[in-house]
Amino acid sequence: MEDTYMIKKTLAFFTAIILITAVSGCGSASVSARATTEEKMKENVTFSASKLSGSVVITGSTSVDKIINDMTDEFAAENPDAAIDYTGSGSSAGIKDTLSGTNNIGVSSRDLKEDEKTDGLQVTVFAYDGIAIVVNPANPVKNISVADLAALYSGKISNWKELGGNDAPIFIVSREESSGTRTSFEDLIDLKGAGGLTGAAAVSEGNGPVQAAVAGNVNAIGYVSFSFMDSSVKALDLEGASPTEENAKSGDYKLSRPFLFCYFDDSASEAGKAFLDFALSPAGQAIVKENGAIPID
Amino acid sequence: MIKEREGQMKAEDVKQARKRDLTEKIVEKIFFICAFMGVLSVAAIIIFVFYKGIRPFVGENAYSVAAFLTGTKWAPRENVYGIFYMIVASLLGTGGAIVLGVPIGILTAVFLVYFAPPRLAALIHPAVELMAGIPSVLYGAFGLGVIVPLIMKISPEVQGQSLLAVIIVLAIMVLPTIVSLSETALLAVPKKYGEASIGLGATKIQTIFKVDLVAAKSGLMSAVVLGIGRAIGETMAVMMIAGNPASGLPNSIWSMVRPLTTNIAMEMSYASGTQVNMLFATGVVLFIFIMIVNVTLSRMTRKAGEKA
Image 1 (tube, rainbow over the protein chains, first blue to last red):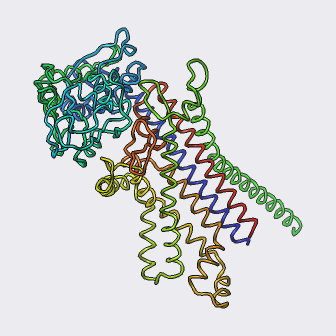
Image 2: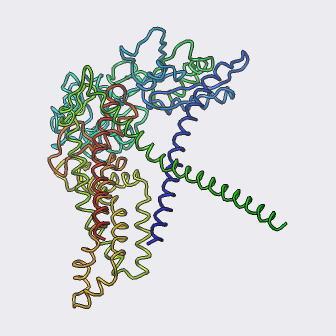
């Protein structure tokens, strides 16, 4: 009896220790993360005329992570003392961070909303992206109109027969609320005007999962950013325009959106502005192109 | 001389005793702080989640609690937040997993305790323990790669992402909890119960079902309740196979569902404004479910203690 009591006591003690380690571990990690961000922001001041130094905090859209990471690598090779620190947290979060001053530069994969536009907030478009409508490679349908797309995503069309395909129900795949790609997609096809997203649609939490869902189901339809598309899915033409860079930039392909930086002149820092210049330079635009997005000119 | 020495020794003894008392007190305080940290973190989480989660329902532009709890559509961009269909999804997913997982889990434990030859038990034991350690994202990947395509083949619906997929994966995930707790409960049954039963002429199977499992009832019940807790809180694996529709109650096991946990995980990283608070409100509902599970568990173990 006494023994089991002791065992219980010891167990309780170890549980407490584990809990405490876990709790204090989490606490200090987030505190130190914040501290480093603040330090990095302060370091920006140390700029010398000959050499760029300090680090630049960039947060925002996850759709651009491949482009920004490649740009960061190349920029770092040219400016070894300047470190670019990019965190993909979503377009809305990136813009919010810029407005509240917790980053140097925000990056967004959609135009700014009215309530996000503030005096002095600079916006630089550095690339365009197209949203591809993807279906399973086994699907015979080749073309779709914007109106049909809106009817499909709002639930008014539910069989491929209505679009010239097989007599089979449509498995609709969308993205989570507040995904930049979904916001752009729904705005570009005016889904709200058509009655909003149907409850029959599945919601996947990223470009990859959408493609996996479409590749795994013969009757599926989904949408992904151009830069994420691979050969496991087939892209549809939109109103006769194929999903190519030229068509997206010229506006013939209706589902396109800008990639942009937003920043305030006084908080962007010299190194940050140099990075913006680099993004717009031929070298930066080459990276945009390499990653399947569309250069600005 | 001798007396002086004795006096000195006494003084030293007192000193040492005092030192010992002090160490005892310090260690005691350290224990207290440790114990308090757990309570503190739970309290902090409760206050934070409830503070954030209650905000959308008070003050100006308050959202109706009834509309939140009974709504079947989640569309933050239209300012519509209904989670009833998610509550239903969480309860059905968890219930199904328990219906499927509990018999398998308890029978596995029975096999391990009463029938398994030592070498086979030595194989099953680590396998079950390993199951508990597999990250849930891998269960999700397995579900998406294997279970969803299989369901798609037999489902009347166009997709394989469904309530059934959720139930199957959750049933697999609750197995380790149920097996190990049931095993402990069965091992705790005094040997003499079974011996007496056999001695009275009952068969081994009769003894297990009529004596051992009955005697281990409270332990088995806690295994089930902990399994429920595990299933209702599971997020990552479920998110990958549930389909997560933006609205609509499930009308069969082939329907897509959106459990409460999934709703929070999918949108928290991107959300802003009211949407964040609504996600915390979803968390409050989930928290209430978990508290019900825990209270049930402690009630049950207390009752079991009284009986013993």
